[in-house]
Length: 303
Image (cartoon, rainbow, N blue to C red):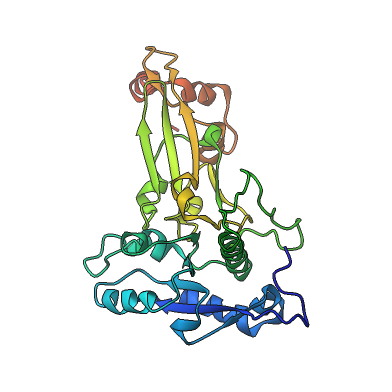
């Protein structure tokens, strides 16, 4: 989509930033989009402005703190009525790791309309450009008297291996076949982005990308590698699709080979992590409940 052709007489689109109390991580990445030619917003026909009255697109960073709330609302109200608002980073989107803090009064959409979310902690410069591009599409469509549409799956794919596709600040992937329901990932997730739900025939894991801060602790501590960080940094989306930004998988129950009680079998990855060379006797353990494992172990001589 060509927003602004070099040499054209079109006025550049004004980008106005509002910091609601951030750590400045997202602001540093936004600085890249004005200081580094590869990510410069001018290629999209935009420029940064310090005047709220010149704002065509408002970029909001940080969790909305109680102390900053009134000033943020005043600044946002001073921008033109037809502007597009973009929440940059997980903090304005969901509160991130600060969600339950007494000093935070977010998420941002509780107080003002948000059009585009660009989750991340912080988002990469590429993701920021795509979020701004998304806002430009919304702005153009509204001026034409319509709302933009985007088909599911109509997203830019990450780069090929060896170029830009490396596991850093990207979408989490879940391999249900490797999960043993230990829930260590939920325990170490400071943002509360991971939830488990016990169902009749399975355990369901849901990971909310709008809360994930890309810390990678879930992947680091997962004993079987069921969770992994990918190179897919493209997470920008319409705010109306916020609750669809999830990674989900079902871990099915299976009957215990000893007593028939439903259990989550031990994944092969777990056995290989615990035992260098699992033998047939050890392989039997994966389909036994803790009680039956204990019974099986009685009388076995210790080494």
